[in-house]
Length: 313
Image 1 (cartoon, rainbow, N blue to C red):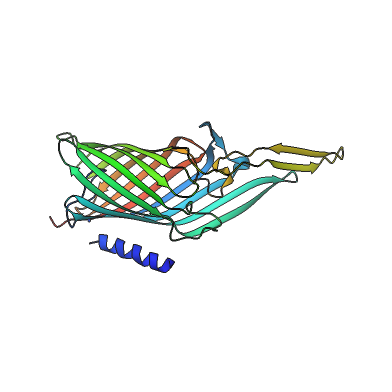
Image 2 (image 1 turned 90 degrees about the horizontal axis):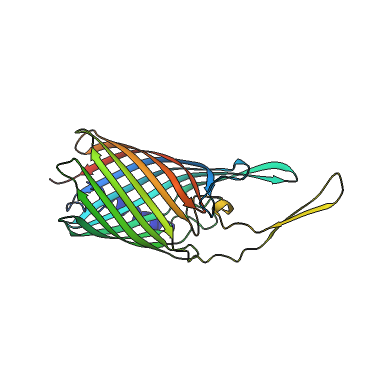
């Protein structure tokens, strides 16, 4: 079954290789194609707790997500765009803990495909602002539920968004906004999704973009009933049994992949710099910071991407 899903995704990606991505709300011209192959490096040693405070992971536990992601858009019709995204991930989780008064550590790894996004964007207004509706489905089809480091929550999502965009011409820039709702199956909470961005051309070939991409939990997750955790050991000096009981937090520290969460808030602030080498080929460098959140890891991500654009015009 997994081979069938792989074949379908590869076929869709290949079809889209026969579409310019405008920012946000803009749909592509019929027959146009945009593809972006990016190498992303994410690292974290911190987690936002349930109050939004940034805390270092216990004993310096770390998590690393290196991935190569292929993203593509294709203009099916003049106002209808198909898009898809598929990542291949190299995940490493170094978990450090105290046992018998000694600091121990273990390493978990995963190499393979992650969640797949498939979506459609329909532009229903072009003036005075561009307005579009976008539907997206995220599928956990390409990995198992028992991976050492899960690349996803192993459940499907469905998302509906309203996108708005505005050209600032004669100023060489644009601005955009997105508002949406994501339905998450199984245990994770549904999410409100929001995004604001601004981009501009610095020169004929160099452009920049600033984007805030946010998630707000609806707080309707199917959380398990918390159970007390008991730690006990014999004190060597007194010979007494020392016992401690505590209630674990619902934070992402319980996961071998702390960048996943069941019920969390998160803001991602992205700074991108692009260079257009030719009409069809360009390069992009992106730095992403996580300035705020709750019950989720926070780190830094660096991305380098090769972009290809094709249009019949």
